[in-house]
Image (cartoon, rainbow, N blue to C red; front, side, top):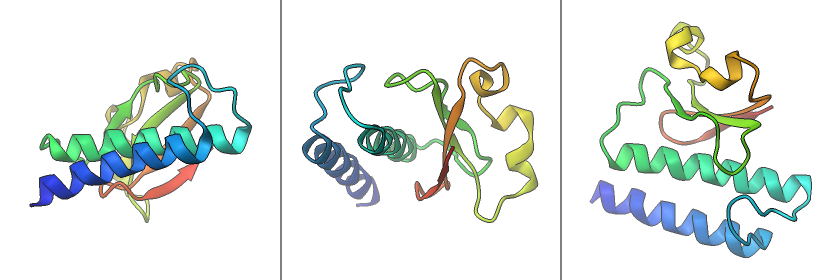
Length: 118
């Protein structure tokens, strides 16, 4: 039942983001900053729910989208709240953030809850 719940959450998040923001497909935003941020956060959450649904262990705080296909200036990373030492380990962070090709990040908990976007 847990997998079905995550799958339903992914579908609902996708539909809500498309309806609320007027999203017309990846890579063609035509949106303001706030709307674009919502789309990116929702895409990050969808990747998180999909990882859980596929049995991926998120407890170490892996990078999920590196970079995000919707905007390569962003990455999607898993971290803990409060932050744990494991979150600062290089192997648990996004490469494109470290090499400077992505300038922004979204962090979610291993349960797919929003922490921050910067």
